[in-house]
Amino acid sequence: MNYEAVIGLEVHVQIKTQSKMFTRVAAGYGHDANTLTDPVILALPGVLPVMNKAAIDAIVKAGLLLGSEIAPVCKWDRKNYFYPDSPKNYQISQYDQPMCRGGSVEIELPGPARNIQGEHKQIPLTRIHLEEDVGKLNHGATDSLIDFNRAGTPLMEIVSEPAMHSAEEAFAFLTSLRMAMVYAGISDCDMEKGQMRCDANISIRPVGQTTLGTKVELKNLNSISFVRDGIAHEIRRQVAVLGSGGTIVQETRDYDGQTGTSQSLRSKEMAHDYRYFPDPDLMPVKVDEAWKQRLRETCPELPFEKQRRFIAHYQIPYTITSVLVPDRGLSDYFEAAVAAAGPGRAQMVGNWIANDLLRELGAAKVALADSRLTPIHVAELVKLIDSGTLLTSAAREVFAEMFATGELPGAIVDRRGLRAETNAGELEQWCRDALAGNPKSVSDFKAGKESALNAFKGPVMKASKGKANPKLVDETLRRLLAAL
Image (cartoon, rainbow, N blue to C red; front, side, top):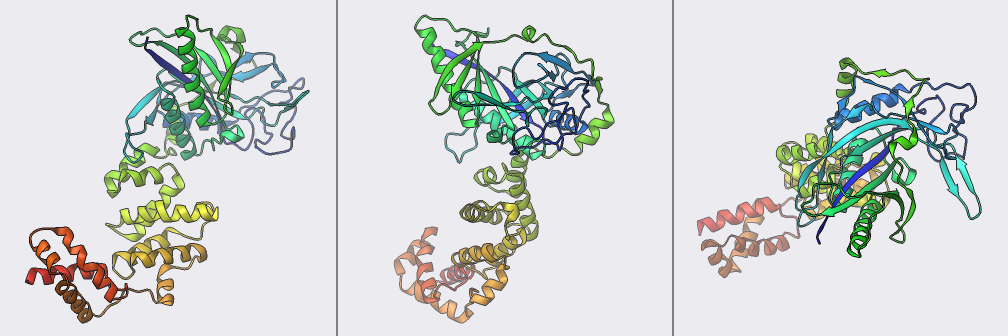
């Protein structure tokens, strides 16, 4: 029997704020254990929570970015459970009145080849709600230690509809969602730091069946690649269970990305197991149109929207946009360089940034923001090449030097004598000599074989010691051939 997988994701995204969700204590990563705590975090008697407006702004902004309906009124609920990572024995969350409902995440599935645009589709969202993060358990050989530094950090839970059908779609969903959150400055989404975490709900059903199968939740998927691998593993496991005559049990399983195996953790909880009830210490939140409009004005252009604009407006290929667009800083750098370079040079600018700049940054292990190479450097280099002043072969040397020193390309070219300057009379004679030395290619060109022109360019460049302007060489050869 052929089966279809049905996948829904629950993605937790830490909001990048200076303080925690319900207290003024600092939020952060990498601090000594249990130093980012206070009486609210530790749930000491008599303390009361106070909402962090910056976190509410961030979730409203996320909802606007993803096309969600922002609730005019939402409330806070207590999610009750007993576990060492929550000293209150409950988590402040949102149950039946979340901040955002609906919306979608646009994804791109890989094309037939990596350099070919793939299929785009919208993955619908169920909800986005705001809650507080919990502490972190660090397990040793004989004991477990609790670090409450993470506890209380503002946390969005973004819940998709069960609308994905492959591990690749889930991978694309997380990649796209991460780009959107980073673009908007809502979160850094570093999974190694726990800033983005994902649980996957997977079920399978016979192809053609519309009812959902029994779902299994996968936990501890601590990288986007492990999400993809874990889902693929779970689909294979469920198919094998049903194929052998067994039944799927609703449960939560732990996936080990290092070994590629999973094991049962516990039976899956239902909502009523958490005994939700409204938090008596927090008032509901009302979000009016003025509040939404103020945040709407801060929303950036989403990555796929920007990619479509780059292709249409700048006439640059999909392969270049796929490198530039995922990094907002890099795409902004590109647009600044294009503006300085002038019309008609966008593709040259894109090529130098996507290939040479990224290669130099990677080799030097330098972030773009720390590089000495500004958009003006790239723009001036492209103008030198386009005007015929600098040959592409020499331009690569100039690029490496200006990346290392921060010196402008024109100054490097003058200092090193790299300008492609040749006497017009000499150039014409070199071209005549090249034509005379290759009569067969002259005949081929006259017969309509355009590529035959390349046979003359090598001898001309050799005679000029590589300093002839390629554009002038091409123009001179064509003029002389037309006169024959």
